[in-house]
Image (cartoon, rainbow, N blue to C red; front, side, top):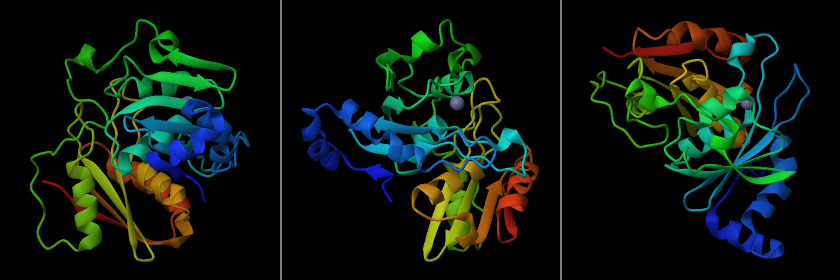
Amino acid sequence: MLSFIPKHEVQARAAAFNGDKIALALSLLPEAAKLAVVPVSQFHVGAIAIDGEGNFYFGANQECATASMGQTVHAEQSAVSHAWQRGATRITDIVVNYTPCGHCRQFLNELPDAGSLKIHLPHSRDNTLASYLPDSFSPKDLNIPDRLLTPVQHAIRQPENLDAAQQAAFAAAQTCHAPYSRAYAGIALVAGNEIYTGRYAENAAYNPTLPPLQVAINLLRMSGHDTSEVTRAVLCCTRHGGHEAMTRALWNEIGACELEIVWLD
Ligand SMILES: [Zn+2]
């Protein structure tokens, strides 16, 4: 399953487009859209986030028919969080097959390069985020210097005697983006011999915040797996922030195992 294209392969593939990486990405959007999980809307949105080095990260919208619509992941959120979980620290371009909704425009405004971020659509290339979101509300309006994807290591105490999955969930919480609430949270999903983690991604406008379970499920799916394969789900979080209730509400509908919780002091 194609969902990540490293920069050297991007360069090789772009040769067929006269070296135009955006044209390559636009041609791949139907592949990204195939990754959509859309039992409610049947509306397939595919996105590709391009990082500062030129790597491609696919994303697609994801819905759960039996959970709140508020648990939905949009394609741009999917692509950006996919990039984040694979280690990207900057996104320079978002390529997407439909115009970004207002929710996503605000979500993207949390990125460190929001001021220069380009959005490319099949019918319209090289649009700035600022042109889609004029007079925007951003982290700086709340005097927050932190940005999504910028590496951070929170000074939180690690609970004792953690196993590998719990340790992975803690590491995710320790590096999440929660400058507004300080309600740190991370998730680890165990499938086969692999651990897929998700970090909490807050937003200055609060509601476009992406919960850690969504980020982990997204990485799991972008890695070619399904929630039915998950044998352990570990949430590591603060007691404030509502993480347990939010996570259970979705995991109860979509998971095949019990949710374990490791509390942070
Ligand atoms: Zn959206």
